[in-house]
Image 1 (spheres, one colour):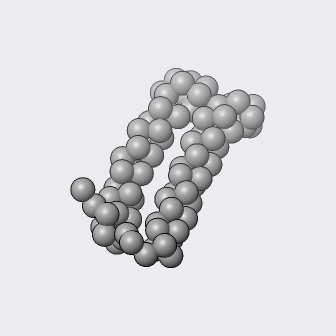
Image 2 (cartoon, rainbow, N blue to C red; image 1 turned 135 degrees about the vertical axis):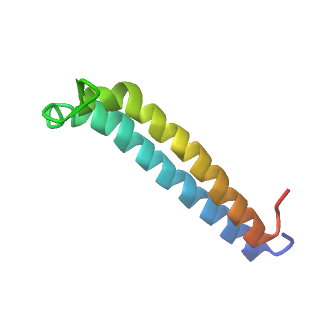
Image 3 (spheres, rainbow, N blue to C red; image 1 turned 60 degrees about the vertical axis):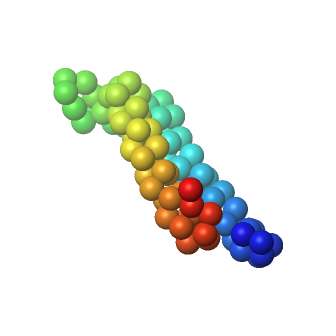
Length: 85
């Protein structure tokens, strides 16, 4: 990555992936578990309402999914910019 414009494009794409991942994580953990909990109280999953379930279990599953998705997207981005391991 000797070219400065290629380096800037790489980091711009990297930051975009990180910001999207953080937004999804925030919506699932804080949004659905705390802010939207009263609105989600009528929907039941595994014997608990959806807001409670997202606060305790769902946000962890979403976070694990984000980890694997981030790794796959970064591997793809690394290959596109020629900096793969």
